[in-house]
Image 1 (cartoon, rainbow, N blue to C red):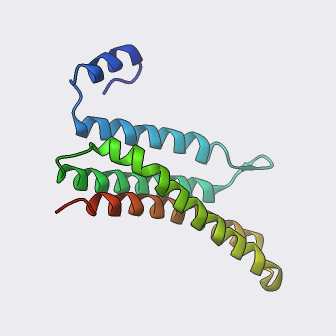
Image 2 (image 1 turned 135 degrees about the vertical axis):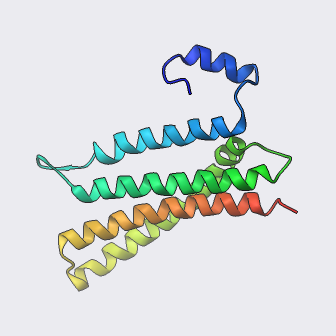
Image 3 (image 1 turned 60 degrees about the horizontal axis):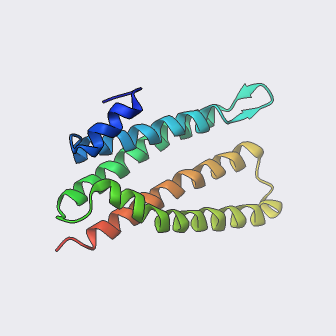
Length: 151
């Protein structure tokens, strides 16, 4: 994998020297880097890092690995679009579905909270669970879309 030289990578991609498995690795590596940066480094309360966000970040990386691998395996069975085409194109409507599911869960959670008076740590934990569930919904939607094309 090329980690720094974008122009060289673009040339190799354009020349067809990068296979689908390597493209999936790049896609997964990008997801992991974005998750580590935005997930772990982005969560602070005061001056303390929330360890729950670190756990969620590690779980998100596991979900990404599973999701990309699942879509990659199903895409290999097709003679049509590549795995990145499936992830990129199908990812848009799948992401909309997962965002709707996340916000529905969040609205329900915050609607019942005044009645249940959940402790803050539990409320944060449920929020983190919803964020994880959102990514599972995303990858399952893409995977099911690809699987529907397999005869």
